[in-house]
Image (cartoon, rainbow, N blue to C red):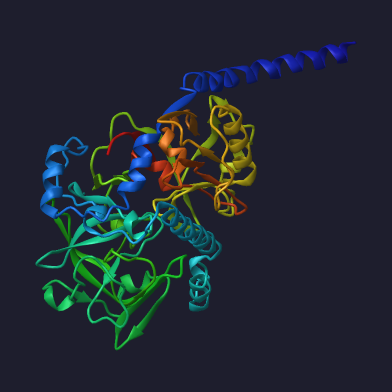
Length: 492
């Protein structure tokens, strides 16, 4: 009898000790809106607008921007910005083909990230690169940020000055890369870009790096030609760039400039970068742009990729005061990626019944969840995705089912609706902070006829990814000093 009473008492103690956490989690989810309103008419109209051949002149775009000022931090410098969709003619005749192009590139992107995580920098070789190729105290600076969807790439582009005198170029931004590079004359092989190709001989500050320079030694894959440091970078869709590594002056509009920034001068560049002059690496490695300019923080807000609006990429600015912060974590195997502490996900106010460990990185650097500007669709471990999808469908009985599409297995026919109630999906970060997503970050159009799909996908790989569809309309701030990632809705 005494033993039975002791076991009963232990059960009561365990239950009581668990109760505060359970009540806290229930309180968090109950305070969230269980559904969000999706503006179907506006979203569908954007699918037609992004394909429109009508390109605004730079002067017209400037006039629009003056009437619609951007988000500005407490001491931000402003610069003129030019949306990519305003100056580049679309290459797709219908939205479905654009969506298929985006998803194909996105799948290749995810495959590349997983391949890179499996290779530690110490054993990375040219043969590995070839295998990846075959897979499909600073001041504050800011630079223009725009959507590059008209190319079908799904990337975002910043307007940046290079050289002295400075010439401006549209360059893709990528938090999953560390190397900055742009196409250079003379070209052995160059793709089509919007701006004239950079000619190093036109800049007084261009300086080629020697093979024994510390910067050259920091490259994961490098070579030497007549004592000039050569770089080589490959991406998941088969795109790649090769050329010489140099230092150059980089300028942020009228905000200021930095000398001696290491940048690749690519003479052989192939793949799907069409429109951009090159790439800005915003990762956590030593050669990324934030690292080289010694930024204490940087932030961006990714606009709706189907819109003609724009935003900013900022360095060392004060983040929005209403930011939802998550711990910024690092992987000792690869310092490029930005991991966040995530404890769970809720749908419609209901926590998914999956263990928190599914979002955590182990001691070997496997697992965890990263925030990535280059991946479009958020990838979750299959068990977490299945729980999210099933719970979403349970609370979306008002939305007519419309089968599957490509990697999306849950779609809806919203063609008869001008607005729709969509279950709220929310990220619950370590430390008790919660980020509810807007409806347009949860379901996305895949044609111009009203078919929408749940914008998440499963993965059998160890790493999960918060993609740019879920980041759109949110200012994402990386506090590199305090190791925090902040999310602030509607701060573009």
